[in-house]
Length: 233
Figure (cartoon, one colour):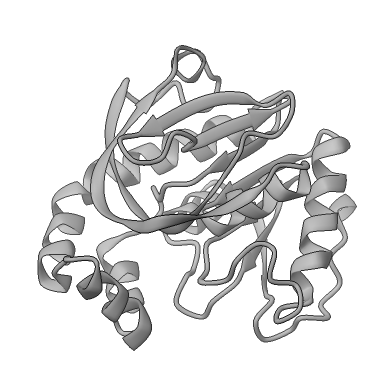
C-alpha cells in the first residue's frame, strides 16, 4: 500500500491516521503543499490519497494556487475509483472537486460533540466500526453541499453534511478522528488557532482535557476506519 498525505498547514499533521498507516506497513509520502506548492501530484502513483485539514478556503485559489492542482487531482482520483479520504478542509476540497459548493457558516463549529450516522452511514463499509452516535472533534467554519450522486453518511447538530461517499472509494469527513492530545497541543501553539477557539467561547485547557478523555476511543476509530479503507475492494 502506497499512501499520499497532503498537508495544508504545518500544525495539521496526519495524527493517528499516519500512525495506523505506518504500523500497517504502508509506504507513506507526505507533501506539505504550504511549503512546496509546485510538488508533483500524480495520483496514479498511490493506492490511497489522504487530504488533511487546514485554515484555507477550498475556493481560495488566488491566494493558494496549489488548491487548483489538488482539486483537479482529487477529481481525477475519484473518477478513476482510487481510494481518497478528505478530512475537514480536505473533505471540502473533495466536495468541490466533485462539483459541489463550499459555503461559509455563520459561526464556526469547534469542540468535541456528537455526530450521528445516517442509515446509509450505519451500513457503510468503512464506518461500520462507529456507533450510531460518536463524539468527535469539530473545527471548521466552512461546510459543503453533497456532490451529485454522493451518499450522505453523517450529520451533527449544526452541520447537516458531516460525511459523504462517492462511488465505493472516495470519502469526505468534515470531522476529525485523527487528532491526538499531542497533535491538538500543536494546533493550539498557533496563535490564530488558539484565538479562534477562545473567540468561539472555548477553553484551550478544557479542550486538551477532553482530547485526553476521548483519545482511546478516537485512536480505535482511526484504526478501524483506515484498516477498513485500506482493505476495501
